[in-house]
Length: 293
Image 1 (tube, rainbow, N blue to C red):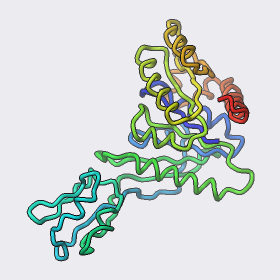
Image 2 (image 1 turned 180 degrees about the vertical axis):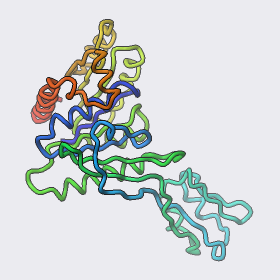
Image 3 (image 1 turned 90 degrees about the vertical axis):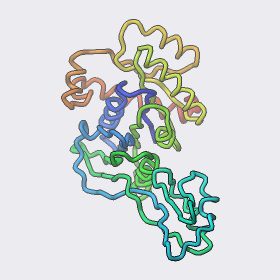
Image 4 (image 1 turned 30 degrees about the vertical axis):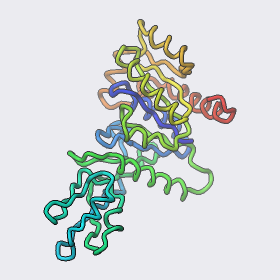
């Protein structure tokens, strides 16, 4: 089962929940993907030893000025306006290129070839508890994280396909915060979205956006209220109004916050949550089987 842990805003405890769920399930084969490629931090809690590293990028056009006639066909077919012709000279804007290859395929003079533009790296390895861990790390200044998230998911699919029986118990994906394109790519193909929010006005505002997103994508979802405290009536009313199931509440505790800040997982400082997360995963699986989620 592929479970994406997501939140409408940063700082709600999304990675805390994702790592806790993965650690609670580490009695079986579990694959953890840190898809927050612009600011990955799950490794600080899970402590993997990276044994695999590969560069990830997209292929962008390179112009052979000796063959180019400046006809402009490449610019005509580029829907992203990443290539243009000025004064008979072809100009390429790598920041806008999506690597679709249309310009290369349509060049009548075969004056365009493709070169790999590296945007980041994929790193993978095992954690001390036996989890298979992988993350993407986007290079600073790169504008498009989606290709790196997509490559990370393809790598995970290949790993799952090569596993012998029994199959992977779970694939846990820690999504980027927000509701932008890399979040949509992380959610694509998920069996379940485990949403994380906090009982604050900002938390409720961004939860509304996230609920709208997962429902537009047709992905079943449930909510974990993190840092729960008195005064969260507005969040509860919203969940009741939109029929969003609250799966768990984790109270605001200073000791837990201090432990997390020191890099300790939630289930280390509160061991009882290991059982709670295992039961939560089982409940999600049962609801999906019954078509209730």
